[in-house]
Image (tube, rainbow, N blue to C red; front, side, top):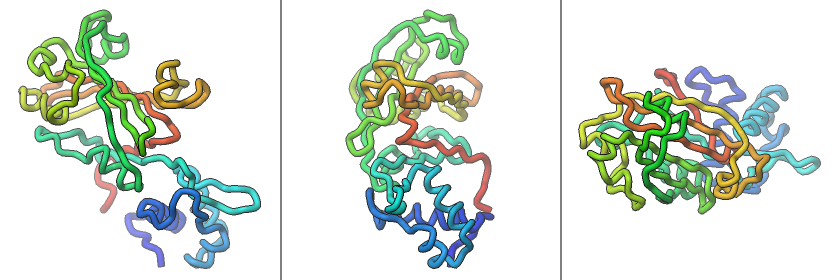
Length: 256
């Protein structure tokens, strides 16, 4: 019997059940997964439902078909990061950590601070801040990894008055706490954010850092974070290996 709660169709419930087995490590990278016949028999569903479940698992990037052999767990499967109701960290910095998100998929998530400094702001970041192009702003960069392999380059920018009040943001070493918590401590509590997302090919340095070719797709997210008063205090540009991480945005309460 499959759980068809939350208004799910049978094929969705089946796909989530198999995804759960992959996440828990019951099915590991390279393992054979249930095929059409096994799904039909195990879940007592029609062939069309079984096909839809497999198609959904392939869409999620979790499994791949091998002609004449069956369906297998992808060796490099993506992490799916669910952003509930577009939430951002509260004043205490509370949120799921990258390590926790990766662990939900049976992977080790780590991150490295790779640099910080001050430079003329990129035009798209200047536009997000509402400042003149060429204004000097503080930046810091970090690299997110899965099982030691880079998957995302994240560069955060801060306006001069914020960087002056929170000097830790301009230093290359690891922060003593999450950046939103540092900002909140200084009086800038982030209460909302807006994401602009696009797909493109990586720049040369991005491809080298992420271990990609120039033809591989990356996803660029420009996140603009605001305080309750509407002031933009953090603009972060994230360049992600599109095959290794998927972002799922949830609006409102979908569980009831």
